[in-house]
Amino acid sequence: MRVTLAAGLAALLVACGGPPPPPPDLVIGASERPESVLLANVYAAALRFYGTPVRVEQFDDPLTALDSGAATIVAGLTGGWLQRFAPGSGGRADETVYRQMVGVLPEGIGAGDYTTAAEDKAAAAVTERTATAWGGRELTTALRRCAELRPGAVRGAAVPAKVGRCAPPKPVEFADDATLFDALRTGAINLAWTSTADPGVPADIVLLADEKPALIRAQNVVPLYRRNELGPQQVVALNEVAGVLDTASLKQLRAEVAAGADPRLVADRWLADNPIGATGH
Image (cartoon, rainbow, N blue to C red; front, side, top):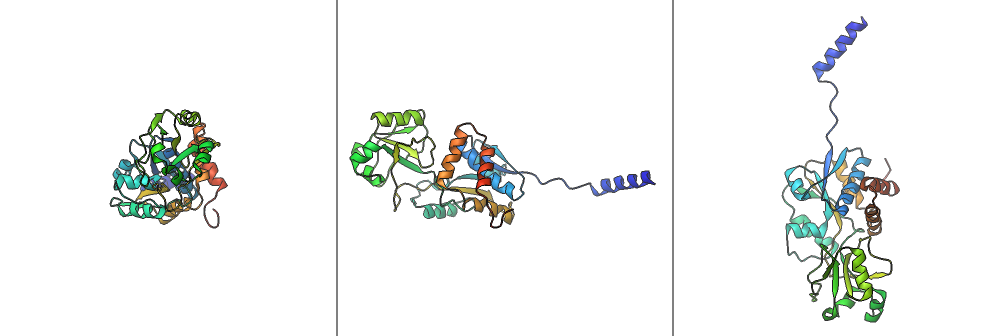
């Protein structure tokens, strides 16, 4: 009898096709840049929190992967996406840039909420001595001395060609943050272009504040995704990152990755310390 029952059950499983296969992983696309991989893992951690299987894959061009369907989600910065989709757009403030970006997204692509407290936009840095000599720690203080500026930047960094009415000289390029800020300290340059979440900015260097109205385009963290391929809870997971990620945290996470930590582990630890969800999980 046992043999007959076992055989019958096996036949039933075969006839019904067996248990359904697990759902395929969602793919979050990232470029090879460490900050891109980190952001992808932050959103992956949020999705896993709600039970979505997900993996991060690197692509030469994550947006192309999103368009083709090779990736379902990509993470980036509002100003960068806006420049990609609508070069020359004039918005600078956080909400303005986000709205302009949403308005020019390709058909079939949606945007999650942007992180109002987390940005990584271009920033001008000077020494304490220079800030004192110029009489202020605001970006406008430097712009009033536009003709005197001798800027530098790490090779490949995004540098604004014009800030307000000032078109600074093309920056001298350096291999990394260490050589850039050494040059700033020695006076080889008097202004260093960096970004607000760059972990390589030394503690003794002053980031000039871009006060309102902003003069440099906003770069807030935001996910893009393929419409109609995410469920409501998955969209909620993406949006909840916007409520907990801030610039200080982003800078710390980038520092850990730069020191050799695994981006997934870094993101998972951060989410454990900064839980999402109104009532927990």
